[in-house]
Length: 153
Image 1: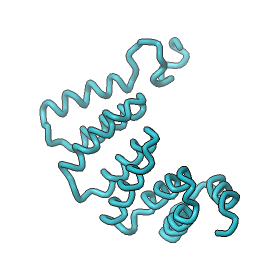
Image 2: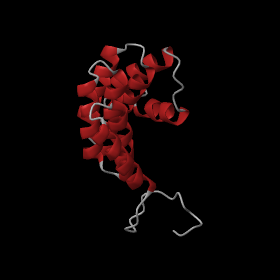
Image 3: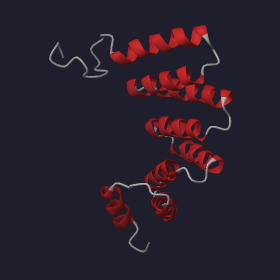
Image 4: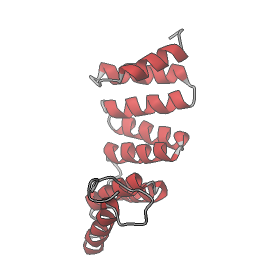
């Protein structure tokens, strides 16, 4: 893309991207401290942005191993599983995040989206309602899609 677009992302040009550099930096941090959960979490974001979802999931599983009571870690792994298209496991991760923190509105919202993808509109509606009750601002377009998909709810 040249110098006009220095932050264009992970284009398949064979060049090193900012995400490749980030992975390298976090590799070094993890080498220095293999129990640094934040480095694993941040590296997972770079992997996910590169489309390397299995690596992101692996890193987030390590975060969970280090911090098993972290609802954010389960939510983040759910996001990576969503990006991979693994909705069933994403739902499990969001459910675990909610079990750890019943007021985690983003986890309810994200689980609603997974239920929507699986055409389980009743569960999607219940999770949207829970997210909204906790103050989460749900995208109006998603609400309209859900309404159209499940007019009885």
